[in-house]
Figure 1 (cartoon, rainbow, N blue to C red):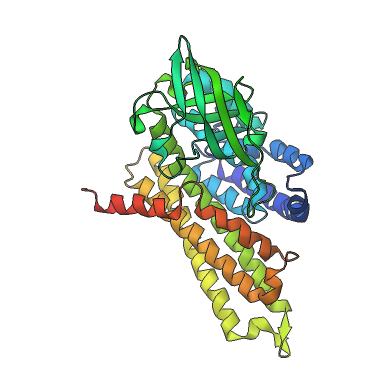
Figure 2: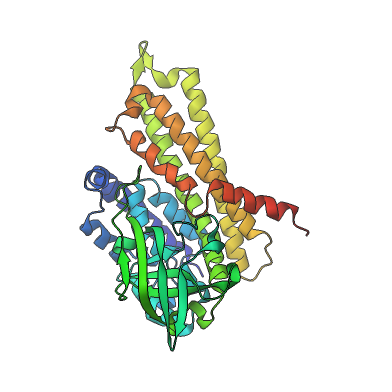
Length: 386
């Protein structure tokens, strides 16, 4: 699926204007209020941003992977809280239903996801199961036509805003094969939310624990209708989500670099702009080369995703998505560090955007699988027999 090129160009121009005229001016308000203003969320719905990746037949825009990366690259050039509002609907919260859901599940949930009426979150991580997702302990016990769920999920993005969860629970024995993916409405009796998390950065994003105490969910809410397929669904969702996050990282790297360049042109020391000094230019040059390389990598792999969707044989996509996620999220950390360095003491002050973005981008190396998990995925793929 893909939007035709003329319509997509119009969409990109609209998003560029929205970022420039609405989101960037609201960055300080988000930081101070720790929330995204409701009028901006409403405008996001009107623009169709909640349904970027949902096919047109289900009420979405139906972007290809390459097109989605272009859009979130632009949304990444402002406070990451804005992208987070739509992120779980566009990505990990809805993709399990889209990829593996039954026709009835798609018809019931995807149109509401695409409109923004329903916020879907992805609930996999637990207090004792993060990188080792196959060891999760949340249980789902069969009881007639229902399952009874007990357990806790941690750091769940958009949980305070969510109307439903793509939630992984153990319906069978140990290991990945015992895990099933459930669609769990947020108003399910027995489902409670913990207090909103206080984080190092990314103010305006919302995460909290999701607690299940004898929460009753119909068996028909298992994604795809088949128990034991949840881990496979989760991994497919995360593979795609890693490329999405890599594009976001490239967008934020671009914004940080632009902030650093602007400061280097304006700030004067020793009678001239600091950008005229070769050591400052060297930092800017390193950042420009790295962010250009990262964005080229993301675009290349996104095209490969679309080629596979069109039926072409494409090998090693999960590994390549991990390469993009690892490189780009590590890259933006280095770009952020240099941007602060170019600003000098001002870069450590809250009144400058680079101080905030320096904290914000640190999370990108953690979610959708840490850098070390990406290294394991890549390394295993490289030594596996071909």
